Image (cartoon, rainbow, N blue to C red; front, side, top):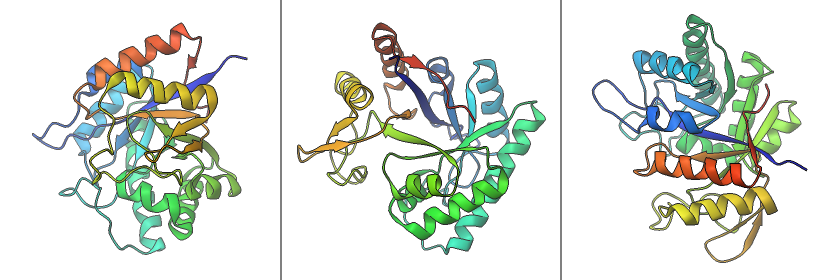
Length: 254
């Protein structure tokens, strides 16, 4: 049986003169781009440029909505009601869809960003708000959600197509949640360690948590972070390893 996996990366997170990540170097090695929609990062021009770059590389376009927190890059917890969560998803995904339409392209998936992603991964009400918003926009959109999370379960029960997401460059807790970024071992910076973790999740459906326990995961799409200093090098090596092992890379079908 041939294994398939999507490789996604958060992109378009520059803002005005402030440059974040190295999108052009990473784009040739991924199949899905999660494009910031202006609330946690990005701006209208960066959104358009990133959409154009994704089109040039044949990469599927996704919306990456976050909390309204430019200063904190959407990584700080905010107290929002489910209605407010619904509203910010509607506005951000709608904006990127308009940008994509202006370039004769379409948005294929939605992946919440940062604190919003983490909140929805464990909170039923936040997860429902996001899933309802995505369905109200376009029920054919694929929802990217942390493998086994509340968001993934709510998405599936609501009838959305869910791509269970795993992370090659983040460590895990025994409950399947990502290690908080405030933890000194939250990020995996060694490329070989990241590749080995990715292969374990794809081949065996297992990731080793920080405490040494084994956590079952489903790997439909694997995330790498474009703001890591070695992002392009890591992406290139990951693609080569997948090719050598016969793992096919392609975006989820919306």
